[in-house]
Image 1 (cartoon, rainbow, N blue to C red):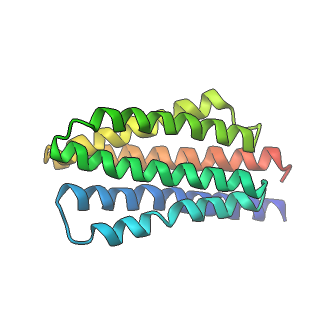
Image 2: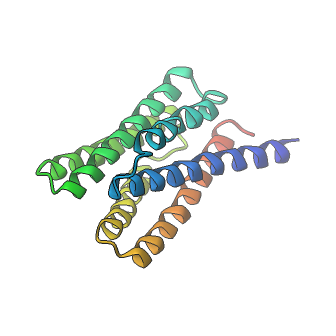
Length: 177
């Protein structure tokens, strides 16, 4: 029974994190190319933090899961603003970039507070890597280096699976599943 439940948890966690990077990619393309689907794509992407929090709420206090949801929503909004600023050559891109990393550090703290099996330093490093990989993807897309863009996204996708698996392992360990 536990093995089946753990497998289902792993599959659900991977799905929501893959959706996180897929919908982020779609929004990146929409912003970079100034497509008409930008607001609809952003709305769908912003469903993702709720989906992730829904998984956490099964195992951890509601308030902790809601804090992760809030920080993920902030992460996505900062990311969208940053992509737009980079596309438009805006001077506030550096400020948004700093805010993105501050948000990631807060996320690492929130994950650790929610589950002591989530090591703060390990999560901070992983989340910073996620931002670095995403920025490489953004830069390639905006430079219209599509092959490099696709390669960068492949790294983002791989890293998202690693994050999902780390989250799953922490739940299994903390909750004795």
